[in-house]
Length: 424
Image 1 (spheres, rainbow, N blue to C red):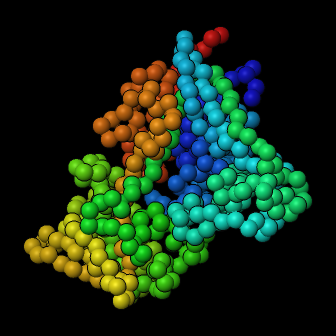
Image 2 (image 1 turned 45 degrees about the horizontal axis):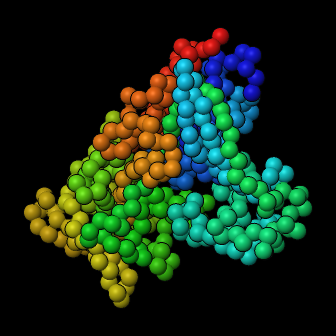
Image 3 (image 1 turned 45 degrees about the vertical axis):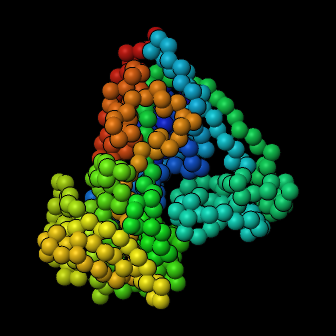
């Protein structure tokens, strides 16, 4: 990166939609940017969605343009498979240590797939939230950047196998790659570390059932690139569904689990109800909710959804979900507040609307102790370290459009911080 005409140096931690946006905005304002992403590709949770608000379009339409801007930017340096392990602040500057895990595949990779065909080992498909498997060497996603394969060291026996080596005609596989540590001096750090889905299996009464999935898994089932090529089918037997129940606030707004509301779950479930309706015109859809929250323009989306005669909105908390041992159907026991009675409903599939958990909460190895948080574990706007800014779902639950706006705001703050700490 050239520093001759640079307006400062910024590190963006997190390569989801928030981090990508912040990196692009800061770079196009004249800053040099180091973009650090923990996974093997950029795109984060948005890349795993089927459609997102407000236009219900696939993520490829927005991500592809932004990834192209990153690929062609002379000011952005991307470090995937990387994490910040140390931050030292001095005189308005920050020395940041980043550890990069080995990909075991170098820049010669053309993503031809010959290595995948030769690989005998399998791993759980994390991109599809564990629904299916990939080979130990795999392309994370069709939209992956960098667009090359990676090897999961937990699944690959390394040189003891080595069958991928002769399969690669380009010499792109290097099983001797090791982790590397790099140090960077920057004037601002944008924390765009995003969120993780809450594990609702710990909630009393819900349990684990073969025909129960989370809302993020539902996105992958409906996606054409998902484990069922876009068909919403029962996980246990691959059958088409006749009915589905969406359980709102699965662990959220609960003193024992997540006290906060993730703000997007209500509309996400109604969006997913449309996925179901598009494939199953006669299916009965039940949505069990505490409150239906539809901020801003989404009020119209709620009104349109309510016109579906086979979409049943039930105000009431789900108490228990059990399984019919014969059919594999699930029985949802809940209260119907409006009717003032308890109900039991048998359905083919249950979708849990799990809330957003700040990603840094589950990664104690990061230097997150230096960052201030709110009572729910999200990063606070009022950071203890000058020049550090939280953005997107690292700061609070947000939809995609809000993340983009928040990232732009964080990029502006980072630019201002760079100007004020410029060494001259």
